Length: 293
Length: 239
Image (tube, chains in turn yellow, blue):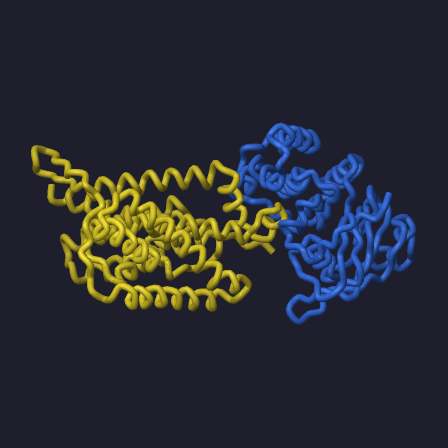
């Protein structure tokens, strides 16, 4: 029973990783860049929820919606100002810029909101569920994490595979030049991708801080790196891959904490990533890009 | 029948390489015009300059009275100038039907009109109909070429740019593709065709330009060029 509880905890954490991983994987799939500032957008989203809900007393759903709007604006602005001018630049330049934006956001938050950790009140008010005569308790947070993650995944999958803007995204992801020849505005498509990824980051920020109720300017950094790992793990560029990678990562991390060591659980997570990439370099669900001459 | 496309003294650079040098040509409404030339002569570069994927260093391109050389590619297609790119470049993860829908991406004239054009494309290219729900990546080379042509037709172009449609296809399929191009032209679509297969291209074209290391070397009626001794030696394999 203890094992089941740890497993469920892992799935819950993994759901949040999956939500964050979506932002990485979609941006990589469409814009072919790693947006290392993504984790810090989560942090900004969490602060917005904190001020609106935890200290402002606003309705939690409304607070999350506001955070989504703020993060969408932030993500699109970052793309417009920092990444778009580098569209034709070597990928290393874009990567370094993304790391720069990440530091900018962290230090901006430090300046605005100080380094003092804030106690985050959970946005979830659902009571825990008791199963097997009280031997297994599933916290309300866990339920919400998993349900929100699944609903968003299904919604996004339908959007990408069943709508014209979704098909346009796939077209840009496969062949930017050919997509332009169809009349698809590549810049607008990339903006849309950043908007979606950043809105999901706000949701992930609220959920993350509801499960781990401490918020500070570096809150997004580690989950960001782990979600990036999850995206690579599942196969970067793949939406189902982000879900699978996120959940697996969460489960591995939680089980390592429970049965091996809380101190080296992160090391184990990254070790598993290295092993997977050695065996399957494209990640679990990643496709090999065939380059035809 | 007036000039539909006028390329005026364009220069295009690929990095530091001066790929297109002072090239001028024009295509009249209803014509099939071909640009022939060897590998690396600048044919595809010229195509990309027309469709807006490459920017000009100098010169101007007019299409139906509009200067298009300053417009981005995704706006040029809205004017009815579609390109079938070299190497087909179909979206392999999307189905045949979805690829065709991407071709109709810019259209705002309603589902019914688009449905009519689906029927038209499937009529012209019946093989695509059989494979409509198959991912484009699973099609054969010839079928992918047909899809690339069908996809471009879905935007209801007034003019079609075709870049090496015969590349990598068997002689029988090449014939079929050229027959399709001829049919498209008969339906009123003006065609600019870039080809290495000069023999086939000169057979269906009204006029032709010969491109050599980034410059126009010769121009004239297609039949005339097909009998020109230099062209025969260089491009048609005559001794």
